[in-house]
Length: 173
Length: 149
Image (cartoon, rainbow over all chains, first blue to last red; front, top):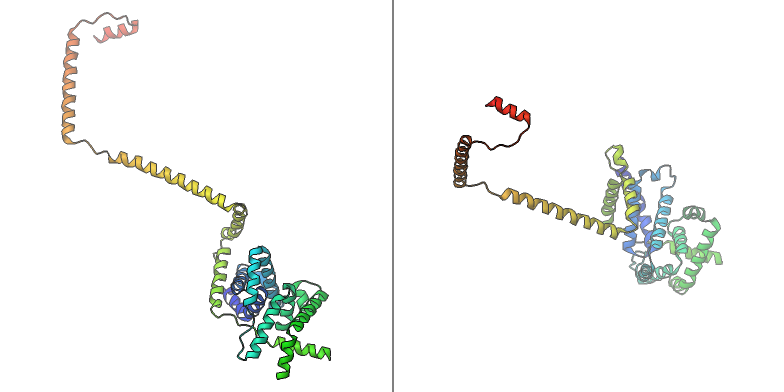
C-alpha cells in the first residue's frame, strides 16, 4: 500500500506544471482536466511506470505531451474547430491586477495560441519550465537543433506581435 | 545589443505567472486514478484475477469494431430468454392452479367404482355357469386348463 502516498506525492509535486503545460497546449480547461486524469490513471494502473526514471518531471511532461498529441490526433475536424474557438478564450496565465499587465498577458495568450503546437510546446518548456534545449529535445524526442529552431521561430513570432505593447510598457516603466 | 534586448524580452515572458490548478481537481483526479487502478489491477493476490485486464482488452478488441451490433445481439438474446422463462412459468402455474377434487366427487366416484365392481362380479358368476364356447387353443394351454379344473 505504498502506492497511494506515492501517487499523491507525484500529484502534489508535478500537477501544477502539467496543468500549465496542458492548458497552454490544449487551450481547453475540460480537456486539460481529462488529460491530467488520464495521466494519473495511467500511473496508477502501472505503478512500475516510473521505476528507474531519473527525472520524474521530464518523464511526466513527456507523458503529458504524448497523451495530448494522441488525443488531438483522435479528434476530428469538429473538435479542431472547437479547439480553435477555445484558443481565443482560454488563457494559461493568472489574472493580473494591473490593467497594462493584464493587456500584455491577454495579448501573449492570443499570440501563443496562434503558434503551431510543436513551437508552443518548446516555448512553454523553455520559458515556463526552465528546461534546456537538451532537456526539451530529450523530452519531446526531437533533435537538439529542431528544439532550438522551434524555440527561435516561436519567440520571433511572439516578439514581432508583442513589440508595440512591449515597447510601450518599457517606456512607462 | 540585440541579444540583450531579446534576453530582456524572454525574461519578461518567463515572469508571467501561469494559472494555478483548481484545488478541487486533486480529490477528483486522485480518486479517479484509484478507481482506474482498482479496475485494472485487483489488490487480491490472486493470479487468476491478474489476468482480468488482459481478458478485458481481449473482449474490447473483439467487441469494439461493431459495439452496436453486439449490443443488439445481446438484447435479442435477453428477449428470447425472458420469453422462454415467462412461458415456462405460466405452464407451471396452470398445473399448480388445478385444485384437488371435492369430497362429494370422491364419494360419487367410489360409489360408481363399487357399482362397477358389483356388476363385474355378478357377470363373472353368470359367466362361470355358462358353458364356454369352443375356441381352438394350443395344446399346452388345454393341458394347463385341465389341470387347474
